Length: 396
Image (cartoon, rainbow, N blue to C red; front, side, top):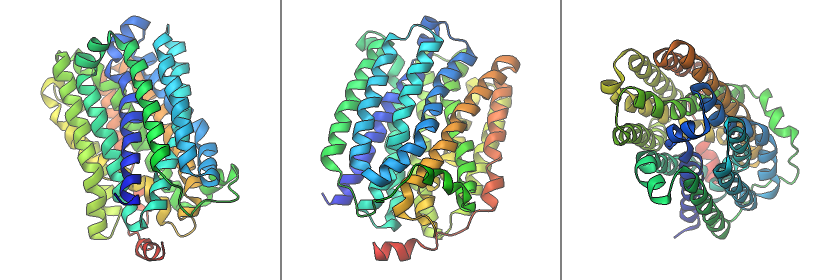
C-alpha cells in the first residue's frame, strides 16, 4: 500500500477507535450512566460537553505541537493519555467526577484532531486531502453508529456493564496509538518555529473567522444531538434496540455525507454552495423533527445528518486552501478551529440541555435547528472556490 493509503488508513483507525469508541461509548450507555450516577438532563449534557471544553483548552497548544514536532509523535502520545482518561471513567462516582474525566479526555483530542489533517497533507497531494479527511470522518461516524447501535444491547452486557466498557475502550485506544505511530511518517511541512500564539493569531484571517464560526455551530450542534437523542428517543417510548437503530441510521447518513460532500464539492469546484445547502437542509429537518411525534419523525434525523455531514470535512481542510495558511501552518490553524469549535461543543450542548430541561425536548430541538440555520450567515462571506488547490497539489 502506498504511503498516502497507509496514512489514510491510520487516520481512519484513530478516528474510529478514539472518537467512535472512546468518546461515543459514553452517550451510547448514558441512560445507565445517568441512573447510576444520579445525572439530570442538564448534568448529562454538561458532563458530555466537558470533553469539548478540554479540547478548547488544549487545541492551541496541540496545533503548535503538531507544527513543531509532527503529527506522528503528537497523536500517538495524546492517544495514550486519552486512553488513561477513558479508563478513569470507570471509577466515576457522580456528575462532578465524570465531568472531570471527560474534560481530561477532551485534552487529548486537542492534540489528535490537528494531527490527522496535517498527517494527510504530508502524505497526499492537497487536491486529495479533503476527500481523505472525509474518509477519516466516515470511519468515525460509522464506528460511532455501530457503538450507538450495540453499546447498550451487546457491548455493555457482554463486558459486564458500562464501567468495563470504558476499560475495554481504553485498551483499544492504546492499540490504535501504537498502530498510528508504526504506520505514519511526518511530511515535509513541519514548522521549525511554531509558537503557541500562532494559533491565536490566525483569528486575524477573515476566512479563519468565518470557518471558525461555522465549526462552532456545526460541531456544537452535533455533540448536543449525540448527548440528547438517546434520552429523547427513550422518553418517546422506543425500545433500546430501536433507539440504537435510529441513532445508527443518523450517524451512518452523516458518514456517507462526510465522503460524498467533499467529492461533490471537488466536482463543482466550489465550497460555498454545498455549505449553504447543507446548513439549510440540516436546520429545516431538525425544525420539522421538533414538532412531529418523535417515534415517527426520526427519519428526519437522517436528512439533517446528510445536510450537516456533507460539509463537515470541508471546514477542517479549509485552512490548507487559504493563501496565508497552507500546509506549513495547518497545525496552528486547526488549533484555532478546535478552540472555537470545541467551545461550541461545550456551550451548545449545555444550552440545549438547559432548554430541554426547562421547556421540553421539542424546544431544545428547535434551538438546535436554529443553530444549524445560523451557519448560513458566515458561509455567505466564504470564498466560493478552492482556487489554490490545483496549484498546491502540483507543487506538493
